[in-house]
Image 1 (cartoon, rainbow, N blue to C red):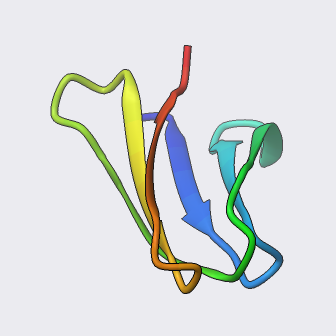
Image 2: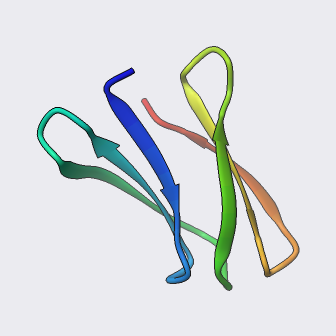
Amino acid sequence: GDKLATSSGDTTVKLWDLCKGDCILTFEGHSRAVWSCTWHSCGNFVASSSLDKTSKIWDVN
């Protein structure tokens, strides 16, 4: 694909456009560092888990 999702110690999940190298979306909602994220197989959602002991599902559309 042409997008990358990253997790961060700053409590966010970011969606990047790999062709342009730009951050196109920032998801906020965790209260502590986000230690993992993964794409759903349909390509429309990213799931993340955090040191705040929560998991979240983000709609990337």
